Amino acid sequence: MSRRFLVTGGAGYVGSHLVAALRDRGDTAVVLDNLSIGHHQAVPDDVQLIEADLGDAAAVDAVLAQGPWDAVFHFAALSQVGESMREPLRYLMENAGNGIRLVDACVRHGVGRFVLSSTAALFDATGDASIPADAPIDPQSAYGESKWIIERALHWASQVHGMRHACLRYFNAAGADPQGRLGEDHRPETHLMPLAIDAALGRRPPLTVFGSDYPTRDGTCVRDYIHVTDLAAAHLLAFDAMVEGDVYWNLGNGAGYSVMEVLLAVERVSGRPVPHRVSERRSGDAASLVASAEPALKAGWQPKYAGLDDIVRTAFLWRQAHPTGYDN
Ligand code: UDP
Image (cartoon, rainbow, N blue to C red; front, side):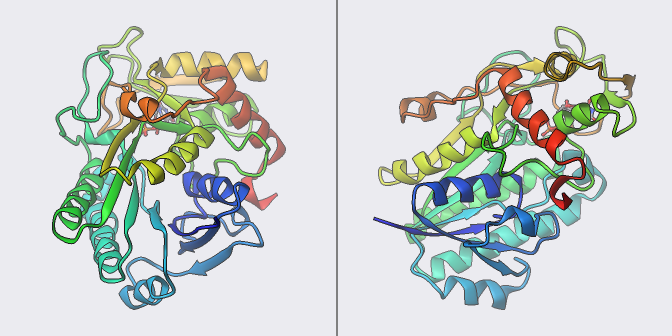
């Protein structure tokens, strides 16, 4: 049976890959996006795109009134840790404020299930141990805090109003649609993998490695890179799992790679060196973030692109084919 979903931020990086997954299985997705970060070109022609800002309460109400919706997937957000440490209140207003308003509108319009694009930045991790979903919450950045506030709003919306939720804490989303339809195109780009690939391709200046004095095996930060298509698949699974109750999943491969190890992977895949230099730490960065994805795996989630080189390869092929991103 075909279902109908609202996807906020469906023109963005992870959101557009979810829209592709919904569409591939015959579901209807409607995208709500202000296109401030997302790309018109990332939304297929046969998918309805409503261009509106989540801060526009009347517009959001009007969209939700076009239900019924089987679920709302909420991706639309500012997502840069570093930026959030320069403009913390903007992150709290735009991510948390707009997020709470969206949750409220969903409750008023009788939405039964809400899936939140959340983050590993909820956790403060220092050791190498992998982080389960019930680990202590201690955001080290205003970005992480803003997502935590939405998670709490969802908790109360569930307790009091019975709207089910899935909070999916992504570790480091990376890679691109293996069919080459979609990729990663942030402006400005701040993420390690696309910057390293572009540095290797000679399209950007040498990569700056933020800090080499962390308590990790080579001194650079360790992250758990998870393929964006595997993340999209986890959303579909979470939608089903919510029948049983609210869902809190950490989503990663359970393997951490340092910044230097990612650079080596880009060199292997591209066959070119990644020019780089080491600088100071970036504010708000945790030393090591590696997921324990046990509950998602138990629910049947099986990442298909679990190897670092596999992830880098899809990202590399998309960047190579799209030298100027979605403008190509
Ligand atoms: N990083 C870096 N240089 C860059 C961008 C990122 O050294 O130009 C590091 C960053 O400090 C972090 C890791 O790469 O340890 C992943 O950062 P990214 O911004 O891709 O994702 P985040 O972990 O912030 O979600």
